[in-house]
Image (tube, rainbow, N blue to C red; front, top):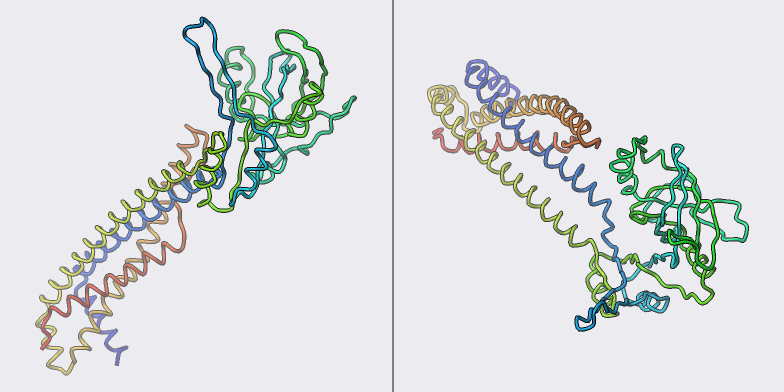
Length: 424
């Protein structure tokens, strides 16, 4: 019985071809718009916002010394400055705070250091800032190095000190020094493996009380590296400080603190500040980014909801008008023995066929459109910024969502329209 009713609904489609064709095109255009907005919003969220958030250490607190300076205006050229040192005792106190998972200290070289570089036939010498970080921090950041980040300080070193440099120093060289001196520019990969000489205990003002030369090798680039200097293993920095000064006691410039939970950041930060130190995290930045992304997603949802309401309203009006125009045919069907449920089934089956085919066509059209549009935009972005970025995100979940929404909305509106028609 129902198979015959389905065939009858197909014949009805044939007799009302032009009416059905226009609603078919309308459903396709609306589905394309829905698919486009969904793919764009997911692309911005996953390929742009989420990837950027992955580079931010969310559950990390950065602790630094609190420096201060006091100027006395009554005494000419007189000022007093100082800082609250981060010692092993301070680290022990912080480690006892509830929620602190791991502490990674940063230690600076406490005496002058110079660097000698032979680059493209030119010899360069400059004073240099050097800091030390533990290798465990690099492992947690998943940074791949060309060699071990360890070094044993001896009287006659045979191997170079492994060092990290920041991306900023390469950019600074390329944009300023290289252009000004007509030298070749360096890529990030080209700097890996280069050697140079470090002279400990020597500066542009001359040698101090102790001096030694040690070769150094760049083994990687990292955001943890000294901004315009070098970063070497913290154990090496500590031994060099003690080599230069027998009375030196280990002090640290910065602490990277990992927390068990993101919710622990605020209470831990407050307790660290009570110890007389500066403490801040990137949680505020993450919260702002999430707020912006939530606003974008909310805007997209509002747009999609508005489109969906318009779709439902238009489909409802169409079928209401279409059914009213077929009241004569409906009466004939009633006279020859069709029940109200049979008549509803015919038109519901008709709308189901239209919605299924329109959804399939819209998915195919939109996927082709997004593929070529995304390739074009990505290519232009790469030409201007040298960054590979995709603005759209295609997944089968969108296909299922658009297909299901198209079918459900169409069937629901047709069913509502049928209720407005008196079949008795």
